[in-house]
Length: 236
Image (cartoon, rainbow, N blue to C red; front, side, top):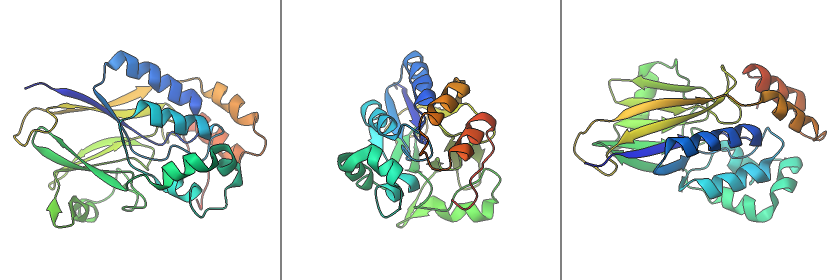
């Protein structure tokens, strides 16, 4: 059976420097599909560019809390002016979740919020297990983004996987994504692999890009996150 190489990524967050670094790695990986897991926009300075990049380079999409918020009822004029109405309509219309069937496992694919709470990698199994069932369907795995930290966990209910963030990673401040290799569409069990992709990029070049936009909301918090990987915007 032919194996498919699927990259899942999200949380670009207006960071075009990291996004282009990930693109270069994608060319090397010889991918069959790219899935976008939400939050193309918000936080960083180049939101129209990262939104357009996602639309051009990905084949499947779900929306994230920043996508829906900025394209919806948030008071976010900086981001909204960059995006324009056509892009914001595209963001508003993104589906909340999708399914991905690989090597006999049906994965529930979503950003995180607003579909579920944010799944931290250290959350207890009893708190996570209920989300393996939705609309009377049992899933063998959950794939999300939102936490900005990649991880792969094996629970009693199935696999719990996070793509990490391309543009706003917490912990190690590199661009992260998730590569799955398996037999797409197969209902029968088959080998499957999960690989965290970690791509260094020029963080100081992104800091310089942010400083070119003096009206960028919480500019110093964004710069701190890009440099250190430490979350800096409590309350958002």
